[in-house]
Length: 214
Length: 155
Image (cartoon, rainbow over all chains, first blue to last red; front, top):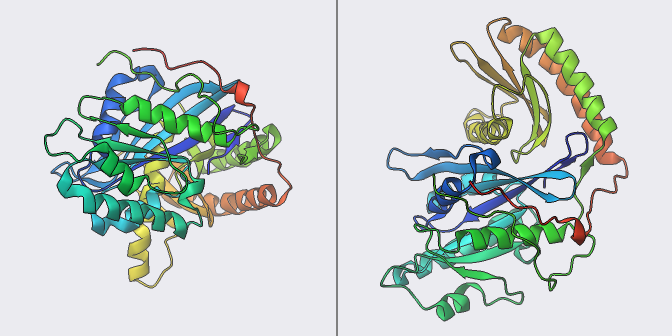
């Protein structure tokens, strides 16, 4: 968990994009990076292999003034999706405040989606965190491809828990609903730390809005 | 409803005092205290030269990545790491189980001097952080109304 610094008036939150290999986690961050004013973000740092597969993590810091009087920094991370990199995923999940789970909507990826979701739950449990206590949203990505499963089926597979969460139909390559999902998880985690934490309360203004493409 | 652990202005002044003394003695440029999740706890020194947030994320990753190497030779983890550049260098050392100190320094000093003073600095910081964790800190919570309507400026 982050620490608030009263001297510099700063709060940091860590949001992790989680999901199976090649589901579009890095593409989410690349889109956000391309659409946020450079004054409000840092560089997108990618620790990737020569073939652009995430080896360690991608990292993008965003600045926003969303809490009265405090500079709020959102640190966006991705994890490597490939099964063998579980130790790295556990590391990136350390001190996490919110999660965007990115599922690949293609039929042939359903097993990988479920495996990754279970892996997320297990890795959080190793930090003594229950998934249901963690602010998270679901992205059903790649909705533009021809062989995608219907949303109802994805909901049945991934959002069929006691506590249902917000889910978004996303095309991360064009940016469709990328910001909607980011703002939803940001609001969830901000409300978790507010005195009147009523999840039914309507969300306030978005934390991040896309600007002109650069 | 959760609360966020809070560093008061006095806590930060206390940590800054330790870091200032350390930077002067070791003749280093910048010291950053981070948790092992990559969050910045405090920083002191020449902050203009680099993006401290990114350095913190990468340093936490670097520290964790070498843990496996350490295990191969029978260690739990390395308690210090040194990255040598041509003009600028980074030295990282463990403060306690959850905290790392990053020191950035140039040719005006040596890694030996930095390493020497970092040990006592880390001990002092560990004592301060232990005190912070033990005192009954109510943490920080905000009102829902405080989540401002401000949004990112459009690019």
